[in-house]
Length: 414
Image (tube, rainbow, N blue to C red; front, top):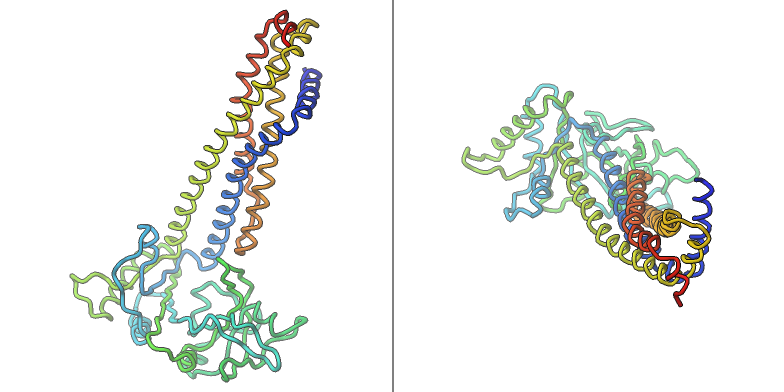
């Protein structure tokens, strides 16, 4: 049996070489469908890994109060027509002081700039540094870890000292060859800040470098970046995720009181759980996966027809060869296996090529957008199974046709 398989494979490779151009086109058609499937699933898998990593660092026991409920907008696939008022500094501070849920940890912060230039002595960064005005709880609620030095203390924020905590990439930009950043003085907009801490490397999301950041006390940030209508965000972290529902209800009530909303008024702010945001993003990723399967199935149907056509033509062109083999004792099963093996070889070549191209494209996209790349073994296994199914569907009819040829008539064929 093994010898027959080896012989059929050898004959199949010889037939493929004799019809090289036609075979290459067929392999490419199969590869395109497999490539589309593997590439999209690779990118989706990388995106899922990135989002899961980022939200996991925040933990499942945090929620955010912001101007809009972005999670609901994503779920409804549309933006709300209602324009909510910004969350002012006084409102954010009032929430932090009045929110009385036991053991809750609240943080108020805002993005002061995303195009800042930071200087150290004669060195300066590109204008791509993100500056955040934060309080002493920001790093804790965001899941940030200080690996060098320390985080802000309550006294630092209360006395508005000119201290800063920087990201790992900002440190690498300004302090070459592993130089120590602690206690060094950085300058932004003419204001000097002493480095008291360096954050653990976090990575990037959608091209947004999470490590090229600088945290400064919120009051100082408000003085330096005093643009009107600054919107503030509030993060709340609970010690136990089982308390989240009650804590969110209490936060909703507190914020409505601060904004003087009547019972009949709709809330003009958003509250999002970190785990619900991740769930909504995952659902959107699942939609992309369905799209990948639809695209690949349509393409693979075309490749199956093309492969079946090339094998039917091959049977016609090799009618005399079939007649000779039958006259020498080959039975119908042997002839059918010969052509079926040839179909299987072509389909698997297309499948392997499609997998390699899909992985290369997925890897390139993941690196370009700083996603966490991982080999999608599920997509690879699915692609191999699809290639096998294509071979079976495309090879049965030509193989049966070849096996049923009459040897006498086949020898007469010109």
